[in-house]
Image (tube, rainbow, N blue to C red; front, side, top):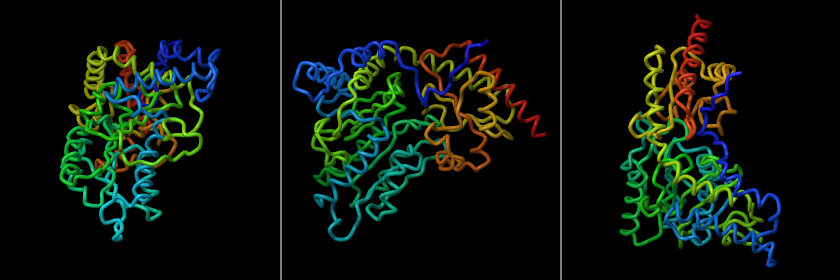
Length: 400
């Protein structure tokens, strides 16, 4: 039996062996509660703080600016709802007391864990939201974000790299724009958040260079465990906690810490450094894959920018093919791919990302995503191309 080929690393990554090794003591013998004062608890506390230092070193920030969460979804919700909560509690926004609602600027291609909280705030009449559209290549222009910002804007959220088409956004440029606005206003707003979940493996996440106040990471996207995430919160950022209780995570996220997962997150962050050398090889494999697909499969077309793109991302549309059928057929042939973000795969709705690019429902329905990992081999990619060629041909033939 042929080895199955996994090309869905954007959805989740296998846990690195070093990550599992780091976690094992805290899944077995070191079972203390990190909030306990005795030796068992203090060992757990030391492990949590050690992981916090590892993440801080990666982000170029202070350790007390790193908060551990249950994942990126919680972290993204905390950023949006926490900033709005703080804003309304302390009436900090210009013109809010004159009747204007707090204003949020985000993009039309964000992850659902950003878009849905924003839509909820809109529906409840709590905040006003502007959704900035991308260009046809999937990249949002910094000037369009700047244009959307107004006097009552309290929060701006732009993802570093899109989870579906891999388009890299000009977040550092946007960060500079926001810092200039704040200097002119001599205030704390707008607060700038970056969802860096897909970017962490490949792009510079130094928060000073990016000019952000908040940044989100996820463990299972970087060869770490599921169920753990990170939120960077710059000191003095106006944000309120959503989970209240024992005051864990510096008062920003109450609840007993998942020590093993946090240790795994720290180790996974540290391992990113050692995998950077593989990025060039990964990009070469990706480019060869794209070249062969476009040559062998008529009617195939790459979605989004080829230049401003994550090195592991391939997103292709196949004329006359339903991507859901294609992905199922590929799975039968031993190749795992997807029709888009894993979080939206369960729905039958067309991709909001592809819709924002101006693609029709039929075009969006013909698109499949292939994402490589650090251990993907040339042989696997060759086998994947062949399986894809056979699958598309079979589906096109059946349609005829």
